[in-house]
Length: 368
Image 1 (cartoon, rainbow, N blue to C red):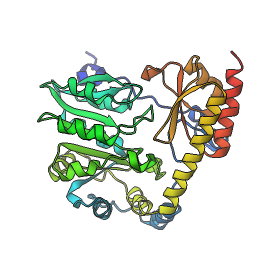
Image 2: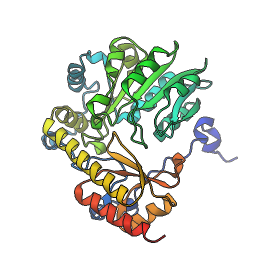
Image 3: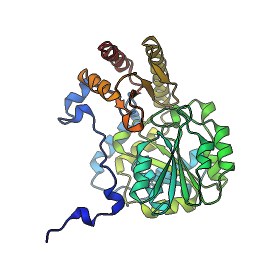
Image 4: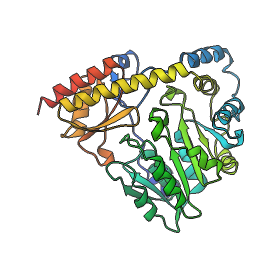
């Protein structure tokens, strides 16, 4: 009798589709060919990492035979100092995506429900389904989280509400007063996970003080990332701010040594590189205005963004448009799987890459 791993697998896992998020220039291996592309599909910082982070990594290369600090004491202390909390309020993760997974593993399970916006970051749904919970999708209103509608979907089975702010893939954000009203109306037993991976790109007046809710002992978990404005995507590091009780649970669920030596050191110095952060914001703002104007000249509708990417409706099959752009060595993200079949998500890049994208897009649109 033959053995089947598929038969032995968790039923939740068997229903989960394989994660596929390849890039067109990776098909034959990254190599030098990747440098020839305008890579505007993964919301990376086009400036790259902080020079201070690169220096910190180089200083540690001879020591990578040693295990990292299992608890990330230095980085947790620095983050705690910045946000006016204790290190016990800080959890570190192998990217904020690991922390999303840990939230699902800690607070969800068979029979539970989690509420998400639609469309929103696809990993929320994967994490929810992987632990056997039910995802409750609430359509966005004007491509923004509809918090009153999400509140109406809360039931006795609801355990977690995921809110991306700014939201991926739309780039929209929820005003602070709407978040405050949502939290005040929240019933007991429901946790809000604020995914703030793109927070540093938001205008200051739109940034809610979510840390305040943690200090007030509200059922709030804040997730932030070093992958976006800090330019450390390839190192995989993020962090959570939550109550010490919550952080202790996340710590139980995580793998030991989940943050590698180089990631921890790079994040520690990148956090305080104000020059790199301001340069990244300024580049993003200039690129945003350039793309807004170009889309308007092309007669295309776009969604004003609070992040480092823009959703644009190209008014044709988005998958075909992505392939046509790839033929011109420009990589952008199709949004068919998000229910937006004629839209693309484009990262705001360097001036050169933005210009390459618009030139290629003009050619593609001219082939109607």
